[in-house]
Amino acid sequence: MSKNGSIDLIVVGGGLAGSEAAWQAAERGINVILYEMRPGLQTGAHTGAWLAELVCSNSLGSNVSHRASGLLKQELRRMGSMLIDCAEQVRVPAGSALAVDRAAFAQLVTEKIENHERIHVLRQEMKSIPSIPAVIASGPLTSPDLSVALMELIGQDHLYFYDAVAPIIRLDSIDMKVAFRASRYNHGEQEIGDYINCPLTGEEYNSWIDELLHAERAKLKEYERQVECGIQAGASGFFEGCLPLEIQAERGRDVLSYGPMRPAGIIDPRTGRRPYAVVQLRQDNLAGTLYNLVGFQTNLKYSEQERIFRLIPGLEQAEFERFGHMHRNTFINSPGYLSPSLQFRGRDDLFFAGQITGVEGYLGNIATGLLAGWNAARLIQGQVPLTLPESTMLGGLCYYVSHASEADFQPMKANFGLLPELETGSARGKQERGKQYRDRALADLEKFLNSYSGNSHSHILFT
Image (tube, rainbow, N blue to C red; front, side, top):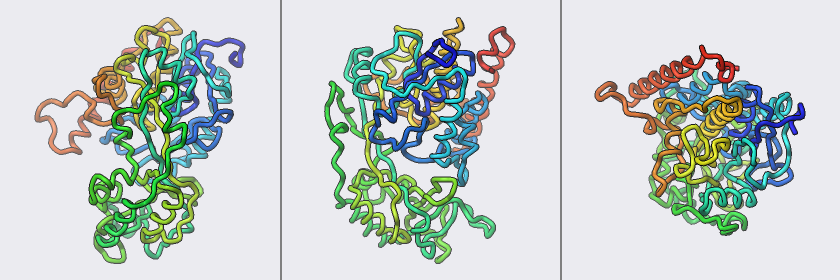
């Protein structure tokens, strides 16, 4: 039962999507029970019991409005995202990106959810599909029992791919005589820079790649590699947007120097020149004592991580607060089952949100949670669920997960390729195109929201 003795909606999963969905529905007068199985049943990737815990990076991506993630943030701010507001309150320096103290962020979200008069958090596993209106936001590490229930619902084997997280090290263990602070393309004397950079020469880079390629990898945990409960691995095995470092290196010696170790916009103050490659570290907590290795998700053995990463100039004495590891991510083949309103086809009062839909990235999880919470509230209150314009980033994401090819469906992050093309010849250059996508999206979103502001049910949207 909810705090006031009634229940209108069940939200399954207290991650980013579930927390946002529960909040949005409750703010619109809906009595919500939010199921979260932690800490009674842990996932193997999470470390605590807070809601909305960030497992991989602590960055929510760029704030630059003419980039895809920046546009999605703009949309979320306009639609009143609670989690984006929380992120702004506990942000840490990260250049043009929005990064947070992950512990402070999770704690703040948890306090807001638990203190809401219309939300009751139930710390237990949901093992079946609720029979009343519900939002399934169980995330990438959905429990085996709920996975079975989902397979029975969709009538086919559940799908999954492997994901990996990056290590975190202590600031005071970094040799700042070698490493230096800088953000890309910020070279002025007044600009200290939000990132710590460890530069490598061509010889150092190639020697390090040799060691990485021959490093021993950790075996997948039993629950990760089992074909359990009929769960089958996807054809690719890995999500292309978050490949382990060692897998990237296998694709070519220079892949990393053009990827997470690209030196573009970085000048080594010791030489006055751009290094051959660079390892960047980003602040991970408000105290500024912990830094994560940007783009260094890995499944190397812990002992090998110590050895390999201490070969990087400036990290010879690195002390690890958390090692990288790999975990299982779960998602349904959404194009066969979801509508752009995130409703399950065949059962209008069942919504899906977050990574289980095939939307990737923290922002995608938050955004789909917001829309699912809005639409669940509208349905319960007798209104038609919303389908956002495809020209908006959130609308584009929802259209993708509901209309992509079922045969080769893969998770997707926010990107301009999801949006309808601009008028031919209307923009030249990547930056200019981004600005035009942004301007069109925000104008269409505003027009869409305003179309509801004058009717008698506008409080459902704008409470």
